[in-house]
Length: 449
Image 1 (cartoon, rainbow, N blue to C red):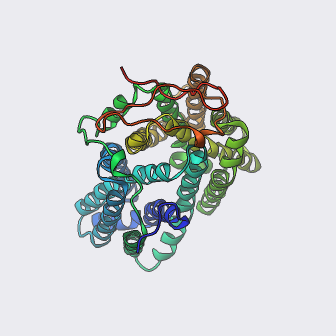
Image 2 (spheres, rainbow, N blue to C red):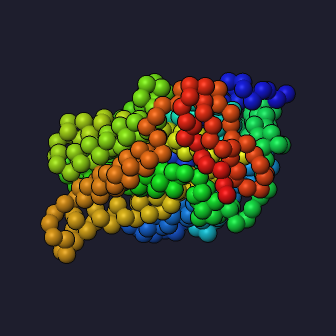
Image 3 (cartoon, one colour):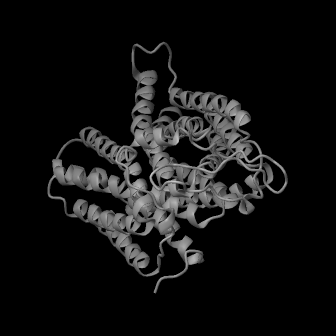
């Protein structure tokens, strides 16, 4: 028996879906090298290269299919896309668990990237069931689910890996299928028939989705800021282990504990701080505060060379967790309801693009400034410096755009405002600007001409 879309169980299912998706990713990381070696009988260095290509394929599929699934959810509803994605993840993990050759691993990662792209649909579902003034807080819960998934997954995977390198894949498949059964019985549809629009293949690609949304004021600038911020965020998981070993000769357990410390604080900042901070100062200022925290942490790592100093930087950097939900909230409030899936597809595709570029760029920078004879000087912290510059550039783009489009204003009364009208199910069309009950101009999107 299905429940109301406003029920706490509905939100719990969506958050559990995102959590399990991240757990499924993290649960296989500790054993992936062993499984690759089992299939190829290659050296550790070669298996690392193969593992990098597997990550690349996963990110590439997420980038390509996020807008597709987002647009499909705008046409057919969120529920079928979410349930089918969970079945896809189940099949992916079973394929990898039973994989007899390396090619099957790549097939599994391809399916996983496609199915995991439905996270954008889960985010759109939350946008459907949440008043606009509370969306940043709910998006913060999504970030917390991401963080917890990356903490829990590797811990479970490492323990199960003691039995077999294939055991974590079976566990991940079981978790995905159980969540599919949960959603099959309790998940209602969140997008009404009158709010749906035609599926347009021209918009069902990463760049088509962005081009379709660019007519709405500030969207292009906000997506550019998101890209620069997310690109910087790829540095920590890509080179932190190499960097700390190079600088302080840390052991693997020290690296793991430091990442877990950061992950816990990052998740807590998104789960507990986003709502109160956005309510007090607004999404625009919250985003700027999060970006300043990231810049401080990244630049601090370029000059600090002590154990305590590294943890101080991680602590400061964890507060950057308030930035992503804030920018997602800013984007969501500027897009009509029948295009929330398309928007979240564009957001997820942007993040996936950074996952393609970021790790390769970060590791190459680290290697060049650490061991290359062509490097002008020894500077293993170069990736963190580049990350700080990337966030700073994002802030410099955001501030003038925010001033122009009034993004620093708080929107406490959005629940009382009329949502954008849907003129044509096949196009993005929004209502003209109106004054709210306080007499303030609504800074929502202008109507298309």
